[in-house]
Amino acid sequence: MAARRILHVSARAFVSPVAGGSSAARSGGNPVTIFSPSPSTKLTPEFRSRLAQTCAWESVVVEPCQEDSTVSQFSFFMPSGEEVSFCAHAAIGACSFLANETAVMSADGSPLMQHSNHNEHVVTFIAAQERHKKYNALVRGREAELFMECEHYESACDKNGSTLSHFLEEIGLNEDDIDDNDAMPTFLNSSVARPKTLIPVKSADRLHAATAPTNATKFQQMCESIDSTGLYLYDSSSTMNIECRQFPKSSGYAEDPATGIAAGALVASLHRCKMNSSGDPDDSVSTMTTILQGTAMRRPSQIKVKIDDYTTSSTSTSTSNPSHSGNVKISYAGLVQFDHVKYLDETELS
Image 1 (cartoon, rainbow, N blue to C red):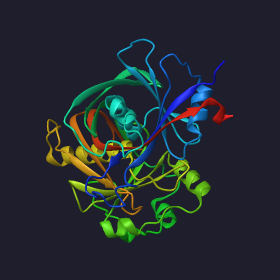
Image 2 (cartoon, one colour):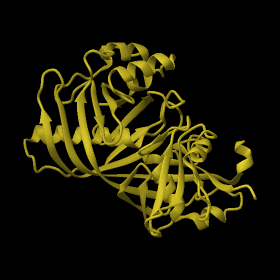
Image 3 (tube, helix red, strand yellow):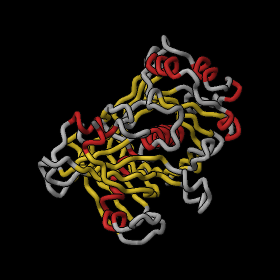
Image 4 (cartoon, rainbow, N blue to C red):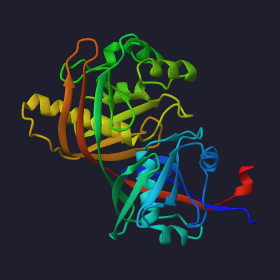
């Protein structure tokens, strides 16, 4: 029996358009590997995990949905081979690939998808771990916009876990760098998929003065002690174009150049804060917020996030563990750059 050949596409999602043709543009955005087997090829969970472990970053396996031929199934993976429920930048990359597959495959070694066009395609998919949900993305040339309906959840960090001071010490900052505005908590877990800990920093200069954790094991344990999958620092002096940085709990790298679900969690929390301060529960629609990330890494990225609707479902004012949940309609938009296409032979995974 012939060995299976899997299409292997190297891409970057949420590439900053500002960098232009600079060297930063050629490294900007968040890398993702897209694996696309032929429709007749059936992959086992173990084989998908092995594919993911060939990557230094997140990957997505794109396959036909068995229940509906008009829908694709996306399986999202960390470089460790761990499958996760969702990954926004991987979804953006995969949707852009499906909409532009002919152009990507015909590039014949030349730079792929460098120029925008105005053709529009709608891509519908399900996530393998959440098969009951369908997602839609609108792809316009190099830009893809992903639409989601999900729960937004906030909770105070566990008081018995690592403190804010401990985390700041680990990333080279101190409490003088933190904005302690009462309107927005300074040490808050926020989630639209997986919990990220939001920390407001007073300025972009202080934000970029932070250093990535040097002890990965210690940092992972600290994050786990507060039920977090990573720190998301943001410049609180800006409201529409916000510089951010993410230090993940345990992703195989110390810092992430673009983090869709963290950006979504931040914008959802800022939007809820705005609703509370206005005193108008019907003030549920926001303008577009631009998240800038990867600057300190020289990998500039841009994520455009919009809240289309926000409805509060529950709030607990418990002094020991205050929390909040709401239902949110959210969209993410960003540019995708395709860098390389090849076929991976099954024997290469042996």
